[in-house]
Amino acid sequence: MDIVDLIDKAIMKDVGEQTPRSYLGASGLGEPCDAKLWYSYKHPKQVQNPRVHRIFHLGHNLEEVMIKYIRSAGLVLHTHDENNEQFGFTKDIIAGHIDGVIELPDGPALIEFKTFNQKRFDTFKKAGVKESDPKYYTQVQIYMGELELSKCLFMGISKNDCDIHVEYINYDPIEHNWAINRGLEIGKEKERPGRKYGHKSNFNCKLCDYRTDCWKDSVGGPADE
Image (cartoon, rainbow, N blue to C red):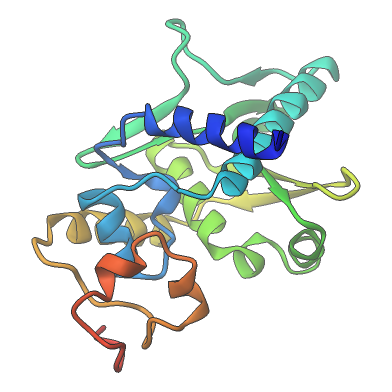
C-alpha cells in the first residue's frame, strides 16, 4: 500500500470538487506574464500537482499558528468581520482576501504572512520583499490601497527552521494603481495578450499550468509581447 499515493489522490479529489473562482485574484496581479494572468481569469485551472497543494496547506497552517502567537502576545489582530467573513475587497472583476489587520501603536496595518524555503527566506531577509518577491510587494500594495491602509507588517517564516523576519512596507499608490489598472485591462481582453517569455522551454513556462493552451499554436518563437 502506497500511503503517499493515497494521500495525493485524496488531495486531488478534494481539489476536483472545488469550484474555480470567477474573479481575477488580487494576489496574482504581480504576475509578470500578461498571458498567464489572462488565462487565470478567462480559463482558470486548479493546480494538478498534489505536492504544490501540500505546500499551500503547510503555508496556511503556519499562518494559523502565527495568528495564534500574535494574539497570545497580547496584540489585536482582526481577520474576520461580524459575519465571520474574511476581510477583503471587490473591485469590478478583481477581488482579494487579506490575512488580517493588526493594531499597532501608530495605527492599524495590513498584516501578510508568507512562508519561504531557506534560500528564498535568506534573500527576503537580506534584500527585502520588493526585490526578493516583487509579486508579494504588488499584492500588499493592492490590499493597502483598496482597504485604505498606509502600512503593512510583512512577516516571513522559514519552513526550514521557523526563523521569522518582519519587514514594514509603506503604501505605494503608484504601484497600487498600476496593478489594478493592468488587471482591469487584461480582464477586458477577448484574445490572449502577449507572453512574457520567448519560448515554451523557458523555465517559467515549463512551470505554468497554462503552458499547453498558451503555446498550442506556436513552436515557441520570439516573445509576442
